[in-house]
Image (cartoon, rainbow, N blue to C red; front, side, top):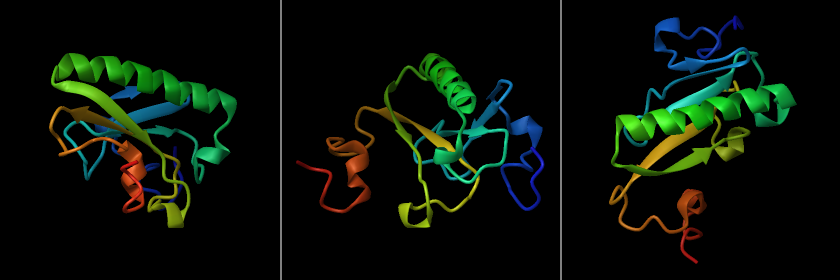
Length: 126
C-alpha cells in the first residue's frame, strides 16, 4: 500500500488489527458503535466493485475472524451490520474500498428493525 494522498494507503501500521496477504483491518476513526472496524484491500482500488475474487475472499476471512475476536472481547455484542458505501451519492468519502463491520448490542437503538434500510429516511420500517 503506497498510493499518494490516500489515508488508508498511508495508514500507520500500528493501527492494524488483523491482516493477511491481500487485506487489513483497523478501527474506524469515527465509530458508529464501540469496536467499529474497517476492512480494506491492501491494493488501492476505488470501491467494492473493483475487488478481485482473491481480495474478496481475503476481506471475508478477516471479517469472519473479527466477528469471533470481537464477540470474545465484548460479550455484549449480539449482532453486526456489514456495510459498504460505493460512490459519492452512496456516502463514500474515502475512495479506497472499505468495508464497515459494525458491532451491535441490545438497546443501542430504540428499534433495530430494518437495519441498513434506515439509510433512506422512512424506508427502515416495513
